[in-house]
Length: 97
Image (cartoon, rainbow, N blue to C red; front, side):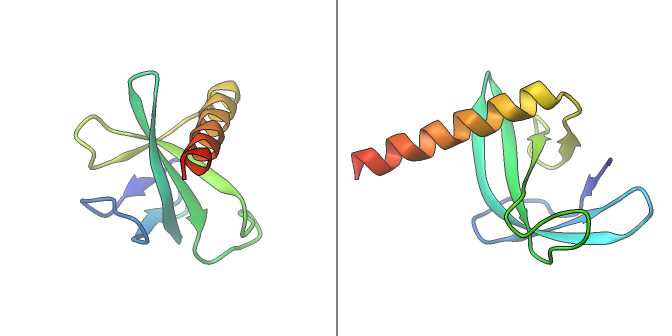
């Protein structure tokens, strides 16, 4: 599902508006941005869950080098690695608190 980013900056709690291949606008909340293997990834949650995306489903996109576009990640293994890395980062932060 190719998407185009229609916002210039990503910040916590910011709504990100993506357009799917059928021209439908889907709003996401930015969960976080994480860096994995020298690439930045945006982790998004559906702001308005629908039949394709559940309320608690995390959607991951690669952030372009200039940080202005989200690029779909087709590799399921990479998506899994990024999500597991993010979870381990969050757990480590919680232990530090």
